[in-house]
Length: 190
Image (tube, rainbow, N blue to C red):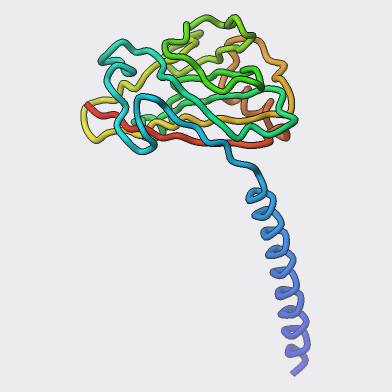
């Protein structure tokens, strides 16, 4: 008979613990939902459409014209990361470009694969091989088309990273500095 008060106390503690977790989760969702969105687009394809071969390893393998709007006040730099989450061995990084000037509203076609560009932007490393920087277009194996995400981030700081930084180094440096973000997805298959 004395076990019932113990069960009652245990249930009260469990219920109040669940409530605290729920409140914390709701706070996190609110924080994510309050981040501003950046609208990003490509001249050569629309969100969700096929990427023309010119921008792939089957063509000239040059970066497409990308433009964006919705960069918030207080932005000090912009970062762009392109990846393929459908690659056979896991997400494959195709392009990392950081410290793009805050006032920039677009990237031109065929950005050179230099570590540092004339405007101070820096290329990070890709998964095309050790020390490889610059745009590397879609080049999936034969089969179902892959998705390629172009993610853009407005930051309240310039990243204190040397040219050639890895995606993980760039993402770690961005932590706590993201003011807004946006995403464009294109597909390519062979």
